[in-house]
Length: 301
Image (cartoon, rainbow, N blue to C red; front, side, top):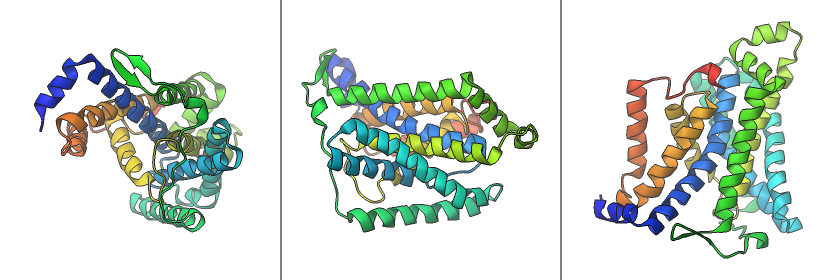
């Protein structure tokens, strides 16, 4: 543990600003993945262990589109939409068959899907690392904030993730579709009795959750190395987030994502060998004090 380095960073506005921006970058990307995971669990009651694979697909969809068109915006849209479509197909063909199944069955099925997606990517793109590179539109000088310098693309990532999160919150809490989805999470039989096509709703919710993972992958593609299996670490962090924030809570996923982002950003300076350990310690404390998570109520969707 290097507390001196951590204290020196906190006492320097430039270092603190840089690490805070890093915390938000990590946190907002994790929020996109975790919110989709939380949405799927909250409505479908499925612990989607294949969610990291969908994040990976989003990154590769963005890479392919960018290589063909040279247009980053098109790559971002395709990453979200194509991953959402893949999610709908998986939900109809596979996931819908394990609704109500025990956790072990869900784990086995989703792990199989993860292996299939990893091997499919390995077959199409190969096992070597790939880089998308920074889009030309973001080839700009870094922005000075409190003496620190933050690349413009990082600011775009934070803003885009925040907009996507607010849009999800608005749809869930302020639209008729969101009211139906929340009712579906509480009493699906009653929603079906009202003549609403619950099969279509389940597919739509899984598609939206998958699309959020794809959007996160597309946003991460310019700054991350792409390789089969890249979604595993994000999946583990996302599960920690939804356990801390509360299963099925979008607001909880946001708070926990930012918390994890700060732990990773400042932990890399103060306790680089115990950053992941600290996340698990905090998760254990939350589970002991509030087993349902900080905001863990199903109605919190």
